[in-house]
Image 1: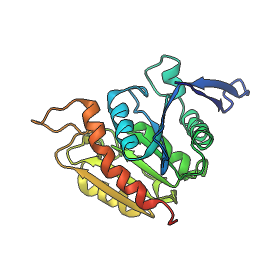
Image 2: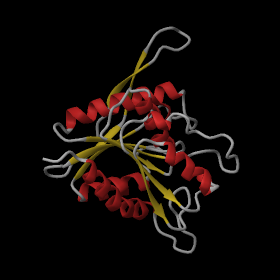
Image 3: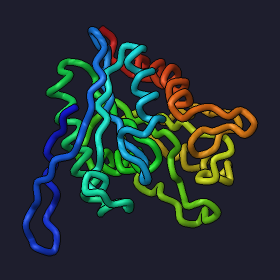
Image 4: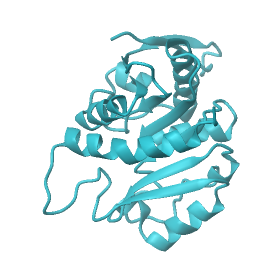
Length: 229
């Protein structure tokens, strides 16, 4: 396991700060694509869901670079400024290009991590071949008026939403469908009965197993986005 350096934008001190974040590369033989993979707001890169998802992608011939955001690296529980996350995404894609050259690069994230990738892409900070949102947090549960979607139509890369049908972050479903319709190129994979972490009531499974199971359909989508040889 080795990390990379993130140049954080200037804060109140008017000076930029360089911080190192942890990262872990899963590299199959002759990968067909590579994915930078970010964690959700409340857990770091070693959460079993992410390690299971990365293992499943590796089995499908796709490399992954899991990484921490700076606030997790500093031992804090609450996310820092969005600008810090966007800067981390820029550094992560740069690092991934160096570690896994000459393959298409994708950005994926669980909840908060995916939303931060979408913001970086909408601003043109990153230009991945596609983005994968593992449970996009459209709004806080029970508060659909606070949508986090105004930037999504500005994302030019293909977007894949992997969503549990019972996820409280995207209810009511009609509102989520309307947001997806505003995107330039968007697809949805539905997990029937799944919650925000894709848990299904009455079908308990370890988080690592849940992540691994999602890798196959995501890998199939990634392969469809790759340019023809």
